[in-house]
Image 1: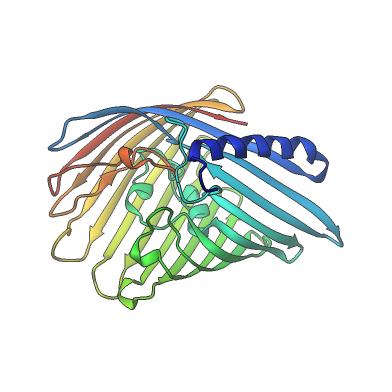
Image 2: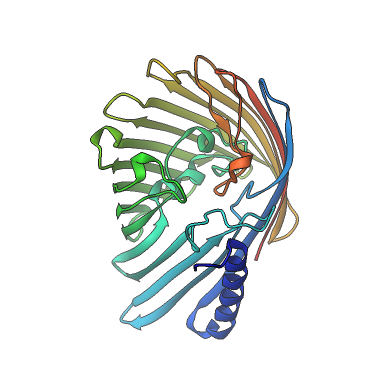
Length: 357
């Protein structure tokens, strides 16, 4: 939309989505959203502590529209349009696109589902099932240290129905997975993703492999992950995951391990505890291991509203200089606090309010 700023686009989109939801409710169209704001203090070695308000700590703030339409014979169309927003200043997380989160349409039936367009990757769906922190907040070492992109453009996804608890996914995409300035490895690329899940009773198992092949073979990247969760009792659930990232030229070669637990202390109060450790197998500039210890508490106030707080410490050694994300899937650049000292330590605390509709 030339000549129209990002804030105006967001307001216009919100009004259109609300009107569409009201006008077509009979067609199974639903307007929904998430509003998530948090206060944070992040302290990194070598720089003054930063205190600020940020958006999207536990869930990414968004406005969305989803719907289905029956075609007969068990076949139906489905679609999702999802627009992210930074609540702290009302801006769009991605100045280059309106529906920066998802924008796909598909067909679903007894065979499963086919989706076409910008959409979440299989790894993104699995992340929250591997991790007591649901792969969000500053507390999730899995989210902070694993580099898998959450969604891709120009994608074709095939999702099988659940057969005895087993579900398979495959995704082929061409195009950047980022926003305003995609990384070289995701520009002009080919994405291949394969995933398998098993979910039955208290047990969840998942595995994912993705290959991002860029125009330059040296910028190609492979990522693999496996993870599980198990509800040991109605109050305790254990989580574990392992991930691998590498490039053929050796510029990236890491292994990540994550262990966490969730304790349902009270019916409306849960606590998460977790550790994540990154092993860097490279040598040279930027080399170094990292680990994170965290705790999070979440208090549910109603079906739609909750309060959360997380406390975390990220330790590094060697030449590693990771940043400490300020939030979840939508993070403003200003929220990425990095120590100027290689191997510096970073700690953070956040307190947030989440409301969904």
